[in-house]
Amino acid sequence: MEIERKERKKSVKIFCLITGIFLTGLGIVGIILPILPTTPFLLLAAGCFAISSEKCYNWLLNNKILGMYIRNYKEGKGMPIKLKIFTISLLWITILISIFFFIDILWVEILLLIIALIVSIHIILIRPKNKPSS
Image (cartoon, rainbow, N blue to C red; front, top):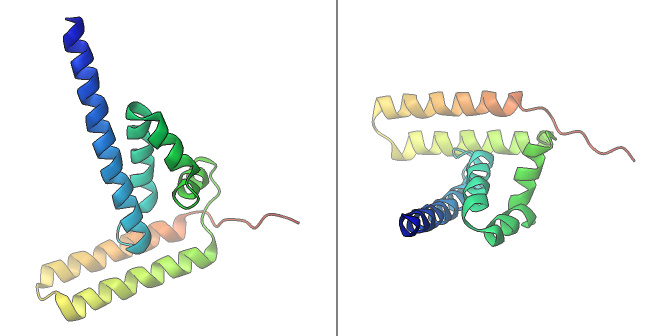
């Protein structure tokens, strides 16, 4: 019985480690492609690393770029207006290029427009990040 528990615990840790690495990768891709939400993937990755690897968990939280997303979310700091404008602009440019040059299926085009609209609304509703007072 004790051996089975240890094996199960080891399997869970390996699964969470692999999942955390995968989710971190998706979070990184989300930084580049605004269609993917960066912060939720990184939060899930942090949860997986908390279960599987303290070293990976600490690396993610202390990473100069990736850790910022998690800290800003945890502290409720919001999103800078310039980043909102950049993200929404890049989102719509990407979606429109995809629709006009790569997608020929009407229902997929409509779905992409709906996704872009919903993501845009979500980004707009995120509290603007205040500049620190000097």
